[in-house]
Image 1 (cartoon, rainbow, N blue to C red):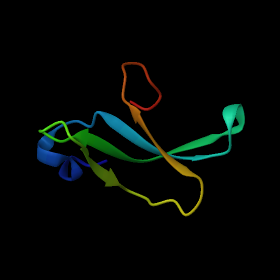
Image 2: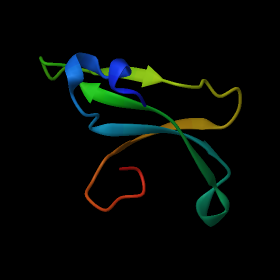
Image 3: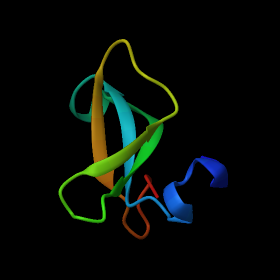
Image 4: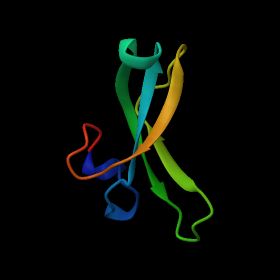
Length: 68
């Protein structure tokens, strides 16, 4: 994710992943990021890839997380 793609220079609060499979056999591929809107009623989403299969999962970035 480049600095130019960040909304208003803010850091993302969530990561987007393409997930294929279930449980311990699933494969998580990072595909983008999300930021809460100022009014708290939604998110701005930046996808660097759009999966044709699997599902999209949005997870909060936490200290020490694989996502962050």
